Image (tube, rainbow over all chains, first blue to last red):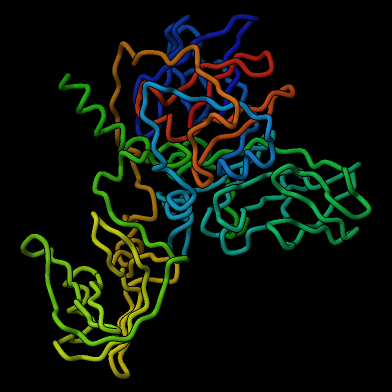
Length: 227
Length: 220
């Protein structure tokens, strides 16, 4: 995830303290406060209780990202010899593998928070349907998992207050039932049809292991397990 | 430093627990990957049945003769093969479907199914996932799931060194393969990709950057 690290016009520098009860703990150099990476909140120190603002980001493959954004810059760290160990296959295997059954501690979920409600979509359930038309606090949302299981997107599925219902289309795209327009879920843009050029807004979502997310938001409603 | 090495091992486990995807440090043994696009089916005769590996944890390998050539076919753990009750012996006619691959310089076939007469031994599903680890998965501890690390704690009071002043390159200079996972973000018109393979380990996990004029901390 990507957090804003600016407070009152001043940039704070973040590093790693370690792991507490299975969740990554960060610190900031300026105040020495400790922050939970999953929750985005300071848990110790002068800034305890302060929240980090999360920006929407996407886990995807380099090939797909490069195609969407040829103008992208890339973070590199030349002191580390680069090798392609973590690929879409690794991701698909770890995130999506597993049998059917109730969500377990070790399951990967894609979690979304509204103002008060929280929803989690187990990756292995998403892999079976790949598109979910859902509602969160009355707002229609779309959850999508790409064919290769490597990219997930959570978007608002409304344009000008008009709710759209999506189904899978060719080429890892989506089609809405209301107008038949074809959409690219990675950009959220309609590529053809009456709504061509329209844009769905992405929502902030988090990949997490279920046990960690459940500890943070025990009130989370899990997709596929009723209300 | 001793504590640094211990940290490395434990952070690997922690990383699996909390981050968007597990650190590759968790995969300490290099296992050949099953490439479903390299799948073929061959018919041949069993020349030899071999067991390789440490006592009690051997793997079974068939050496088969097909079309005048000798091919090594890797089945899987010997215990799993034995449990199937299908026996292989020299002279058996078999039909093997599997992925051809090169492991440590040797070409071999990783079997998905082996047919002998009217019996079929299934070793992997069509994605190449081994059948022998699926039992563990059901009990919640298998390779394809994360682990419940909720009791794990390892903290370094003084914190690890910061990752500052990130190097950035244009797309064409990035040493990435198309299938590598990245964390992509567009902010205030600026686009950036953070490759997961650069972000393993306590000094690499968090990147302090500025994007679209906003100071950001990227981590996964």
